[in-house]
Length: 456
Image 1 (cartoon, rainbow, N blue to C red):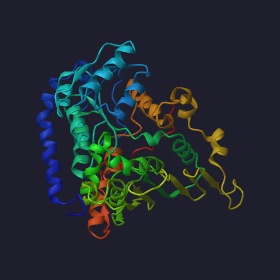
Image 2: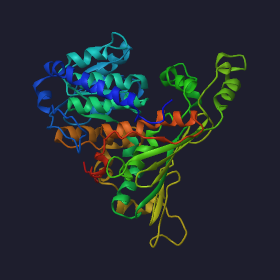
Image 3: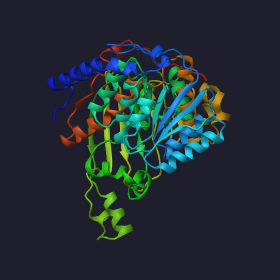
Image 4: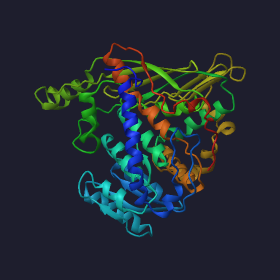
C-alpha cells in the first residue's frame, strides 16, 4: 500500500478525472437552469475564498431523510429564503412525512423520489434546484455530491464527506471543474464553546497556537448492534476497517483555529489502534456467546489515537473511541504560547489573566468573548438539535448562498478533514508509519486568508 498520493498512479488518476470532467461539462451545463448557469465558473486550479452570485431563494433537494436529514429539514423550514422542492429516500413513508411537513409549513408539496438507492440521480438531473443536501449512509455521500455538481447544483453533505482519498479528490476536482460549492456540514464547528474558543484564538488571547487535542469519544455499542437507523450500515465499518473512522467532529473546530488550508496545512500523521475487544464483550453479555454478533470479528481497535503534524510545526491529537463504556466527549483542547482552553471539562487558563497555575471556568469568559453567531442567533437556535449548533450551521449555509459569500467550510476542508480516515488506516496497517497528507489546495493554503469571525 502506497504511503502518499504523490505516486505516478495517483497523478494519472487525477489527470484522467480532469479530462473526463472537461468532456462532460457541456452536458452538465446543457441541463442547468438559467440561475445555475449564472453561478457557473470554470476553474482549472484551486480556488481562494470561492464564492458564487447570490441565490434568492435557495431551492433545495434532500437525499436521505432519516434522523439527521429530518432534523435539517425542520431547521430549513424555519429559515427565510429556502424552498424545499424535492426529497429522496429509499423508504417512501419518510418521503411522505417530509412532504407533509413542507405542506403544513405553507409551501408547495415537494416532488418525491423513492425508486431505489440511486433515485437521487433522477432528482439531481430533473429538478430545477440550487442545492442538494445529503444525509445518507457514508458510502452514498460522494455519489450524491458528484451527481449534484455534475447536474449544476451545489452540494452539501453530512459528515464525513468521504471515506477514501480517491473520494476526497473526486469531490475537490469536480467542485473545481463545475465551479460549484461542495460543503461538508460539520455541525461541531458551530457549537457554542468551540466558537468561543475560535474567538479567543482570533483575538490573540491564547498567543501563537502550538498544540490541540480532539476526537470523537462516544459509546456506540448499542447503536452498532441495532437493527434500525445507523445500526443497519455503520457496524460494517467496524468489521472491515481499523483506523480513525470519524475524525471531523473533533478535528474540524481545531483545524479552523489553526488555519488549516488557510495559512497552515496538515503535513503527515501517525496512527495506532488498541486491541479490538469492546464490541465482542458487549455482544457476549447482551446476546449470548453463541449469537452471530458474539461470533463476529471486528477489525476496528477500540481506541485509535492519531497524531498530526502541520507544516507550521503544530501538533494535533485525534482520538476515536466508540466501542467501550464512557461518557461523551470531543476533548476540544487548544493550547498556545499565552494560554490553554478546553471543553469537557470547560476550563481555561490565560497567563497573566487567570489565577496563577489555576484553571478558570470558560463561562467567566463568555460575556466578553462570546462568538457573534451565538450572540445573534441564540433565541432562534434554542432547542434546535445538538444544543442549537445544527440550526446555526444550517443558517450559515443559507446565509452565505443568499449573500454570495465564501463558505465557512469549503471543499478543501471537507477533503482534508475526511482524509484522516484512510491515512490513519494506512498508518495502523504499517506499524504506525508516518503517512503524508495530500495537498488538496495545491499550494493555495500558503496564501489563503484565515476564516474570520463571521456574523449572522
